[in-house]
Length: 402
Ligand code: HEM
Image (cartoon, rainbow, N blue to C red; front, side, top):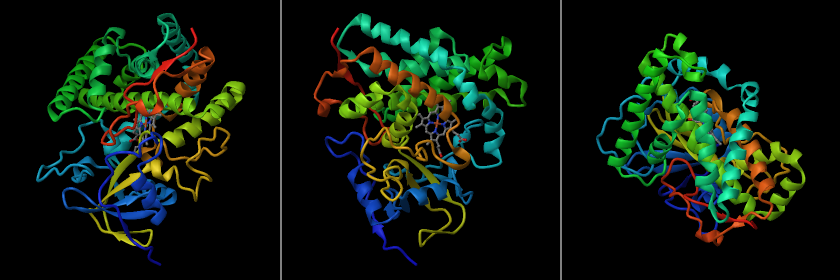
């Protein structure tokens, strides 16, 4: 049976004013029409937009849909013209299919298990306490993005990878440069090149003098230096910006939902569920692309080989057929099967780390500052543009009773 076919004219450039946490209205409307819509790309390519939870999940688990970068010639916002997209550099396995993908992911899996990540709890508590102390000492107001949400995940991922302390500031700036959605092409290339150059030096330094970290652990494998650099880049790019924006938007969402904030404060045992619900509600990694490798029947339609699909994770996580009252932030919701970390072979490698960071940092923040509040009207909190791959806030001014 064929579903009626809805067309979204273009990927939306912004969210509804006053709704910083909800997917753009056009995407919510598209899902109301059905789980899959047609989507013309600026290049003229006729692609698809998948917004229904079940369908997004099934595409993510289906090897007939590829993550290969060189096949993703159609960008949802830009017309690349005739530019050939090169394959992902060695090690950047997020953009590869099997068997290349497993070659890189397999040696890493054991290093990011829930048990291993729980062992980091104490260190993450310490890093969080240091930043909250510094905020308290400087006094209100503070920008929660620079004082709290960015530095905590940067320090954690840099320690895991063995990036020396002195290099972290430079690092954060360059990663920011290629994730914020506002950088010019030249700046983007400069930031990417700087990170690559730095990581080459780092891999060489680990070869010369291995230390106790994930990168040094991988030196015993048959991975080349170039591959190690690619792996390090993926871990940094995927691990820092996502967590930083989930922490910042998480704090913002709690401040905008005082009943939920009060519930979390009153009931620390709610923290695990609260983290899952914030992940679902915020879905900062809002969408990913896939390309059909062969003709596939999906939701009553034929997706022809070579066609690009956009999988809208944030809209799927607001699917009312899967989550009752989906646009409400309900920390007591007892259903962790959201798609915020994806699904299938590319499901987030760092999800247990992200969970521990959120579980530690957000409750510590609200405990430490019981009178925490926005220092500007909520409408004035500047969001990242929709063009950014990862949703987020540019800054989050807060105050408290000192
Ligand atoms: C993959 C989200 C934190 C490392 C993914 C994917 C999503 C995601 C949706 C799947 C992409 C796809 O299917 O194409 C998030 C969110 C995070 C987070 C929302 C924080 C709240 C982290 C952290 C790390 C990390 C802390 C690092 C240690 C990775 C890696 C992949 C990945 C390496 C690629 C996995 C693969 O291709 O096999 N992430 N992530 N992520 N994430 Fe995360």
